[in-house]
View (cartoon, rainbow, N blue to C red):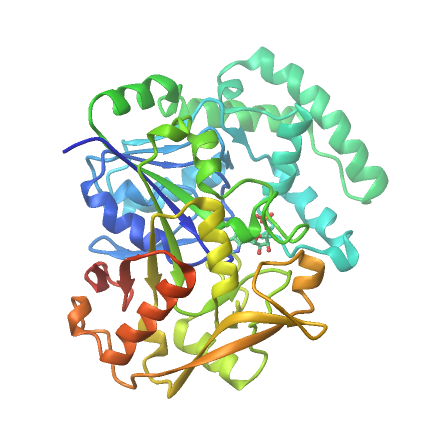
Length: 424
Ligand code: IMP
């Protein structure tokens, strides 16, 4: 097979079903790499091995011939990684192929506590983070006081770095947030133990990527969240602390941008969001509750009820453009099976003006959605195995979404199982 590099990104606010698509595509993949984020992800995968919510391990792990890497752009809690690996092993999943970039940053216990107290202190700008320590770990990385996986294997480096970082964080935690300090000796012992347990998995990814690119391998770069939660392009400040875009995939994986062949944007047939931030199509009524119920829309990481709304083509077209999506994958079409009519947002109204470009988050929050109403199909799509099996109105709905988003459809999800993704 010729070499190919595919990036899979979200095109709404995360939770679009990227994990399921990556699991499916990975059956024919040699290398699967996460390039940003960390344990804030909650990738749901249902296959022959069972029902999983992967937070850290790439979804390619179910193919024993696929090498899986937590890339340089990720932040990883080693204890959570060890627990996730133990759970996979218990379900007979081969885990020898899982590696972590030596340049990836370590999420520490103090990051998790800081995440909570700092988000509480943001007042009306509270982000509603997952509490997994993601923001504070990236903050340390940018402040150049972060601990990298390579450091876990070098005690003296670790000692010196911990002294500096703990002096800073303990002062903040005790003086500003009235929290107890962290014990340096205990953290050092934990770090050394993680290093010992993970030493065979901590690797320099540069030769691995070089070899994959030079030997016609099939590579997937697995994104988390979406550009709507991107630090630069999302609804700032209601965003995560990394770049969940195709450009971020190049940075976080070390795969040069010119080697990326395909960028698949994943979108649910309706919208959901966890956390705060603008969402003009949000349904705060019985229909919202109904869709939440039908779609099982509860956070995979936090269990929080997700905010639910109609498909917003302004958002998905914007995200597809920022990423340069070559294809779009529509998931959870079956959740709309019973509806008589399905509204799709095609524009916004703001102070009497019609808007078709994504505005600044401050204005976005005040926009009123303008809907085009499409007819439902009111029959089950769950047994469909090809596009032709879908009812005419379901096909028309998909065609209209593709037209509005201006990207052709790659695949359609009609249920949680692997064989319920129709590749077009
Ligand atoms: P953080 O990434 O935990 O700092 O959270 C930042 C924002 O992204 C919050 O709105 C979270 O709810 C949201 N978020 C983070 N990870 C996920 C995810 O995997 N799915 C959905 N939302 C997420």
